[in-house]
Figure 1 (cartoon, rainbow, N blue to C red):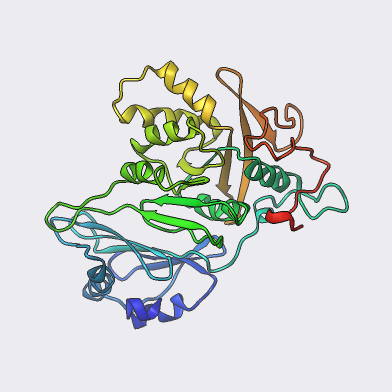
Figure 2 (cartoon, rainbow, N blue to C red):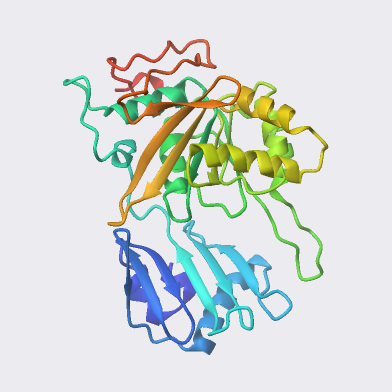
Length: 347
């Protein structure tokens, strides 16, 4: 990435595989995230140097950063994401956040640090086995969490559980997913150009994806009126979809999804929206970042009954096995005592 940025002051940070995020706060202040912890670092970049670095990144992409358009999102060739905010919106100087993806491969079990394998001869922890089954069974999963909680990382990990023969269409505002399957179509939204034309919103991509014959839809984040089109897709036979949403818990995730559908302005009554959500979303998976920097899944809740959520994880009082059946006919019901193999029959 250092070749792309051509910023000698950041070379050492960009070469460090432990650095997952680089933050330039204006006024020469810089921080990095290592192992989930933020720490201050010395960086020899003044205001003009930061501006030149950002302009070198966005110029080949046809993007702009000036007083008329003081914020920009850009995707770097290695899949990392750069977001920059210019004065006067950024009061203390140009602010830049570089979020890096793929520095270290995560496994599903990493999100369940407190689990022990069950049964004793299995390598699959209970929570990981449940999610692996849910993906194979074609459940539609909504991944919730706060900013930096690990939603996109978890989305990458879960998408790897999809069988190689299935066709995946990903939809993102800024492309961040890096899936290893051979049959992946990646769609990325586009902002308006300098003349204010050419914008392609996420909602348009959701509609386009349905014409690309997807077996699975993977939406990087639901944050606007595209929620309505996504619900329509999930209610018309597109099983096994994965998407993320900003929320503080499973219940809040469903409430926010409901609010986003209302943004589409289609005039559906709230009861009809809730009925569609219950019919299309099978479970909410909530991930959070702990004070030590570790990302962990705190809850998996199945949609149950006319308005309720039923806890599947963590195990304990009130939790139970999934009541919803698999959406894919060839997948047997979940059995917590049986190890779940890899896609394509591998274990």
